[in-house]
Every structure is written in structure tokens, then in C-alpha cells.
Amino acid sequence: MKKEIVLNILVVIGVVLFNILFWNEGMGVNTILFTLLMASGIYYQDASLFRMRNMQFIALGTLFFSIMVVVNHSLYAKILFSISSILMIGIAQSRSIRFLGYGLIIGILNMVSSPVTGVRLAAKQSIGNVRLGGLWRKLRLFIVPAFIGFGFFVIYSVANIDFALLFLNRIIDLFSLIFRLDFSFERIIFSFLGLMIVGGAWWKNNQNLTFYEGNEIIQKNKNRGKYKGAVFIPNFISLKNEYMIAMITMVMLIILISILNILDVKNIWFKDVSGMRSTELKAMVHQGTYVLIFSIIMAMAVVVYFFRGNINYFPKNNTLRILTCIWIIQNAILAISVVVRNVKYIQEYGVAYKRIGVFIFLILTFIGLFTMLIKVKHKKSLQFLFEKNAWAWYVVFLLTSTINWDVRITQYNILSDYNEFLDVDFIVNEVSDKNIYVLEQYSDDIESRGNWSPSTLEDGIVAKKYKFKKKIENQSWLSWNFPDHNTAQGL
Image (cartoon, rainbow, N blue to C red; front, side, top):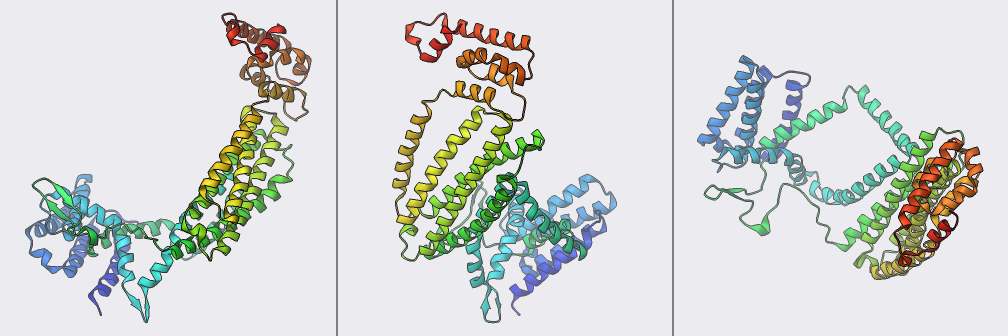
């Protein structure tokens, strides 16, 4: 049996012993036993280390501190024992260390990177005729899709409580099964800590770290071209690999957004919100709307990324194009859900500047999704996407600038029959002075539907008129504009 296989088995045994020694226990005799266990593993891995004075001194020092933990049981002794243990791990990795500060740094880095080191070492092993390294190369194709999928899962969970609860209930059922097996989530984390400590001490990390104490420079590699650092970053240079990643990502995202859209159609599109408490409705609309808008932006970014270069012209990417078109259409349905949320809020509370802003943004979003659909379907370039959207957005801004939103917001809120009381404070104090003549014209309607007394409303309008007069009294004809002229005529 190879020494590497034996060492991997010993690490697993070490993690089990770490659990036995420290789970639900304080620091005492177990620190002495663990120090002896650590030193034994390091000796098996490289016996020549213990011929070095610095390792001999640190090993004996760690054993001494563990004894002091038993004798004095002070926080001071426990901290020194922990530091000395990390130093022993650092020196076990680089025998050339003389400055203990470097040993502490290397010890911490090796503990953090030990799970990755374990994966790398395991990838070199074989089970029968199956080489784990080949299996790992296939599994790493799922790393990027998993990260992207998890990101959208979090976004959708924040935007839709029903979506979050759907998965949360399944997770609770899974953990209930684990708890029946008498194995808690906390113990999993504790075992992972044990893996970091034991693996950091016993697994040799091939980082080729060299320390130059004269100028205190750490050179991470002598041969830069052959350096393999502690952090494993998949190198997806193959177009075929990138295509597979895009395929996996799209399938995963389509499943997630399909569930979200089904829940939105069921629970929001046809839901009567008139009986909902104001706090619940505001939470559903405000939080959900902005998060969903963010998710659509991220979705467009994902499509742009995957179709940014050669993959756009990859000859066998028809399946990916179809999946991407489905994904874009699903995001359009999601945008419709945002429209429904916004409309339901306006029906209950009236129009505000942000509600108008959401509608304008959604118009731009539909344009962006449509042009992206054209890009994917007809193999257009990113330049096409940016140019068409820029001109379309410019036209939208031109058209929306023709509307006097202050007057329209005020008129709608006063005259529309929505369920809540009229927010008089908003239309008097927050909307600009362009609506003064509207406030006076519909003062009776404001009094009947609003939550201000007639005298308070009159004082508010008078104060708004005063501020308007102060604003225009020092202006010349160069500042003339139609809304101010119209307001001044009504004073």
C-alpha cells in the first residue's frame, strides 16, 4: 500500500479522534493526547523533521503548553498552546523557517488550504480502473454553474417568500433525517475544523515556499512556470468545456426561474391584496420588486458573458441557444410579475416617483430582453446589443420626458379610487410646486379622502405657495418655464 494512501487514511482517523477528544469537551488532558497524536503523524509523514532543532523545540514547547493547560487551565495557557500548535504545523511544511512569524503564517495558510490539498491528493488515487483525477476534472465543470445557481437561488428566495419556504421545508426534512442519525450540523462544522488542523499538519503542501530572511521576502516559487498554489482555480480554456458549463448553468437556472414564475403566477398575479396588511404588501412589493429587477439584470449579464466570444459562433450550440431563449422568455415573465406587483401597490397606495421609475425601468428591461433574444437567435455581436439598446433607451427617455409627472401623480392620487387614505403629506410636501394649482382645484376631494384636517391642508398649501414665490421673485425672464408660469397665474 502506498504511503500516500496510508497518510490519507490516517488523516480520516485523526479527524475522528479529534471529534472524540474535543466534541462537547473542555481543554484538559485531551490537549496532551492531541499534541502526541499530531507529532506522531508529522513524524510518519517526514521523520527527518525531528532532527531539526527548531522542530524539536516547537514540538516540546507545544507539549509543555498542553501540560500547562492541564496544570493551570488558564486562558493564557490555552492561547499559547493554540499558537504553538499552529507553529508546529507551519514548521512541518517548511523546514527552512527560522523566523517564527513566518511559521505562524504558513501554519494558518496550510490549515485553510488543507481541504483543497486533500482533494488534490485524492484526485491522484484510483479506485479499481477509475482514476479519481479524471472524475474530478468532470465534476469541476459543475463548479461555476453551482455558484451561479446558488446566487440566483438566494436572490429568488429574498424576492419571494413562497419560493424560499418551498426549499426551506425540504432542507428541514433533510436535516431532520440527519438528526435522527444523531449527527448535527454543528458537528459537521466541528469535523471540518478537525480536518483543517489534522490535514494542515499531516498533508504536505507542494507550494515550494522559500524564505529570504535578509530582506524578509517570501518567494512562493522557484520555478514560476511550475507553481501550483494552495487555492485551486479551474482553468476552463477549452471551448467545449465552456459550452458544457453554459449548458449546465442554463438548465439549472431555467428550473429555478420556472419554479419562481409558477409561484408568482399562483400567489401574486391573481391574488386579492385588498385584505393584506400594509406592512405585508409593502414588503412584497418593495423588497420583491427591487430584488427581481436585480435578478433580471444579473440574468442578462449571464447571457452576455456566455455569448461574448467564440461560443456565439460555436457550430454545435443550437441546444444552448434554445435553452437561452427559454431563459430570456422566462425572465420576461418574471418582469411581468414585477409589473403585477407594481400595479397592485399603486391600486392600494397610489402613485409615487419610484413606482413610475419602476415602470420606466421595466420598459427598458423588455427592450433589453427582446434585443438579447435577437442576438442569441441570429448570432449578433455584443456591439449590436449595446447599439440597439442605447438608441431604444434614448427614445424611451425622450418620450417619458414629455410628461409632467408631478401634476399627473397628484391628479391620479386625488381622483383614483384606491383603498388606502390619500397620502396628503406626500402630494403637499414631497411633490414639487408644479402641483399647487391642482391642490387648490381639488381641495374638497383631498379633504374628504385625506388624513389632514381642512385647516392643516390650507396651511400646507399656503406654505407651498410662499416657498414658490420666494423661489421666483429673484428670477429674470431667462428662468421662464411653462409650469412655473402656469402656477404663478393661479396665485
